[in-house]
Length: 339
Image (cartoon, rainbow, N blue to C red):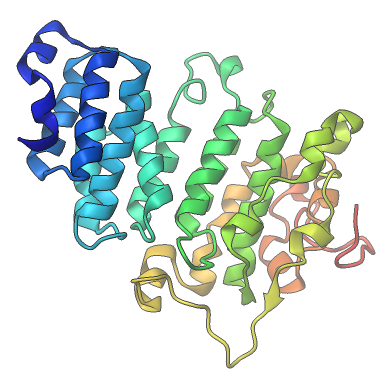
């Protein structure tokens, strides 16, 4: 049976635990072979489910081995088809929800490694974060976005970019709005506002005809978060820690003859069907913005000062409790100036 011949599968299942010795044997065999079959992958999933007691080393081997299998061994290498994504989801979330850390770690690892993955898998991953505790806690006061949540969301969003510079899509943006609405008024980590604003900006500016930078650049964590103790709470909430020059400096309006690069292994039309075309992509976003704490903050105009004119008009009146400038450049503010 190759890799799995190193351990007594039936005995491990019977005792319900995987120890360090088991993992060492599996790792040694895997390094010698470097491959597992589809049948062996099924057994690895079965072992993970049958053994609630697991040595920490098991999680690492489980993620590494199955990431290699899903991304590098299953055809087409480096790319996940919709069928392969559905197979993965069926194995890590039998009832639609991932209930183990190893399952979530595997999903994120696959997204990180793959050169391309379907939008459906990215949306599934974002939904898992949105619906995970404490975000879906029965106690509203417990709902908050932690720094770990933000790091995970950023990692998932950046993984969909692959080798290209695809903007944040409408489905992704709507999930972020849902998270923001769920945790409104809670003690969310300051990095949540930073990521949220950058992701929505990326989505709207792309739909408004701007060339967008790679997601890893567009959604990068701002340096001000590492020295946030120097900022008063109200300044952080209003987004004063990062300026619009930093936020918009990497965006450029496309000329009439330019076209946005297509996603690797996916033509432009296919991407547009998945993400929504042009104005349709952002048609729902102003409605979502009305539910967003980020857009309703009394100092929201400062946070969104410097939006490109064509994009700011899309959100006129969306936030700021009807003031009409939450995403605009009104009030005599200069485009590209710092708050």
